[in-house]
Image (cartoon, rainbow over all chains, first blue to last red; front, top):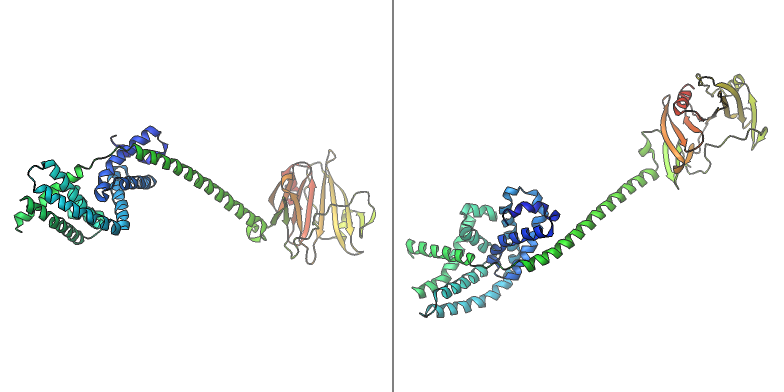
Length: 189
Length: 256
């Protein structure tokens, strides 16, 4: 549904069919951003629902023309808040997975018969797990910089940090990812 | 690591992350919508309740303010009107003066004794005199200068508590069709026990009127005569009873 966000301010007055269309569009709009950060479908859905009600209650305060960036920001903030709460537990959980994935990766990349798309899939899993091990702020900075294609200045404005602080976080995040990837590339090369 | 090598790896990283993001599959949102629907219904109910509570709170606050305003010693509330009013048990009490004993049960508006009671009545000496005699014995009384057209002076009756002290004076005027205006005047001396008039809230209307700079109260019962009363600056409490138009009664009072 195109321009679904125009319906948000009057959402409560819409009939159920239109409400559902608006919600589905919103769901599609934010799903990847949240999943990219949390890597869990159920948690993603919970966060989508929670942020949806937050958006409904405050949408009247925002101009329609600027609603989409605002929605993304609400969703990211909600997600980062969630991640901060559970960061320690998740870190421990994913540590084993990453180690397992590394061994799978090493095996896979060393076998000539392994299809390229399988290798990519494994690489994605590994990359995603490594991102999931990072602190929420690092994940967000990486996503805004690499996925959204924002400049350092724009990222700084989004996460309300200074430009040098964002540069530093981005550098550290990249360094961590590259350290892990070094092994894969070394093996691959 | 050379700059070129580092750049290559950064590009690789960017590409990998882009692909990772693109390959995230968005599942069907039907189940999620069902849950949201349930939450929307709850939210609607909650908002309805909050709205109802808001209305209830507003009504409660208004009631509280009215109740406080009407039941406290009301000089602050009604000082603009000059009269003190109190509502108790659906009866409005209008005080011309405040006293320490404003709850005294005896109202100042004691009805006049029956016409057919000559001589003494509960310690009062009742006598019918001429207007001149009345003015001489009770110089505080006021005589209207402009009774309505075709109205004429009828009689004066005085009620004395002692041989020398006149308690109340009644002046009566009669109209062309047998109507009557009765004027009761009483000089208030010393401390009063709270000069008040009572009127059931549902028996009519009341409003403040200005009589020559004094605030008076006009009671308009749903049936029966108009009743206008005020306390003059020299503490003469005057009651007028009449079945004539309100404007005429007020004009009559202002001519006293």
